[in-house]
Image (cartoon, rainbow, N blue to C red; front, side, top):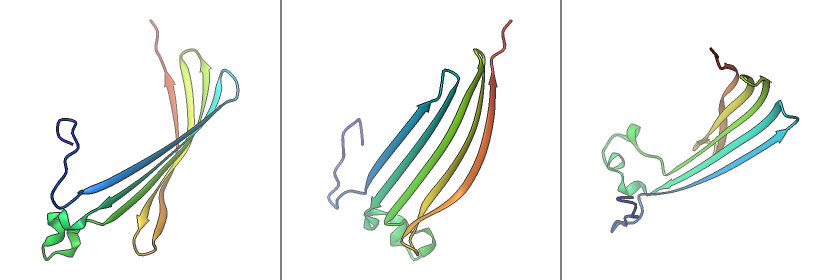
Amino acid sequence: MIDGQLQQFDAGNIFRAKQSDLSISYQFNTKAQLKLISQYTKIKRNTELYRANRDNNPDNDIAALTRNINNQLVFSYKLNADSLFYLGYSDQGAHNPNLGNLEMHEHRIFSKFSYAWRN
């Protein structure tokens, strides 16, 4: 896009991207909440239009298809009006062209404590 306008090239689209988002939350009570967030991205590229694919180095070639998925599950608890505690899990997956499917990696467990100081 240039100045908010979709640009067409004589050779066709450089890429086409689709993104899907899913967000589900459940409120247990006024203090506790559980949230699930999932994002899926799929990018199809016209590899003929990428300069990197026209040189003699296959190591820097741009893939024709990229798929990614990101998931996050977060539990939050409000201790008082100024304090929140978070506990969560996240993972990411990427398209493996050799297997032809999404391969999950980067599994993480995290926590956070948030407090607002008052004078």
